[in-house]
Length: 173
Image 1 (cartoon, rainbow, N blue to C red):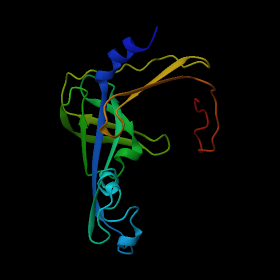
Image 2: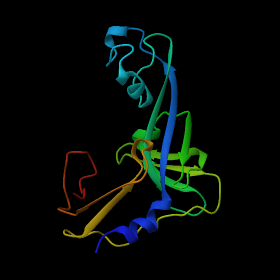
Image 3: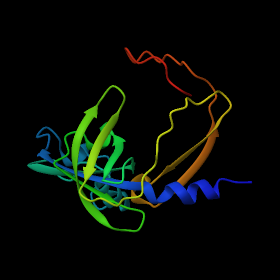
């Protein structure tokens, strides 16, 4: 027995989130400060995922993350760090369609963000009312870096973890 049935059910609700941030680059940077030498095979890869593309002037930073629809009418959850300061947010659905999205709200403490895509017939994941128990199976289904669906499994190994994150000290491990 595997997880294929549940993955097949929730995967259509998983989205890739891509953002663009246009900002002044750090004028104190020089070509020597870049994390790769100009012309390096890594240059295109690192620029694609948010490294500075110019030490002077303006830089357009692109970032990617994952999320999932929580309602048929286009509300989706992603990470705050993905959409923070984004000027443009696009999501790509499991079937390859791309939509513009608007950031509705964020919470940096929990690293969560709510975004909205216009539409009214999106597949979505219904969140449970039950709390997970130590020993329960958990699945993570995502679309990191726009690479396509990724699935991993584990178990809840502990509850009530305090990691010194302020008022939120009841983390699930």
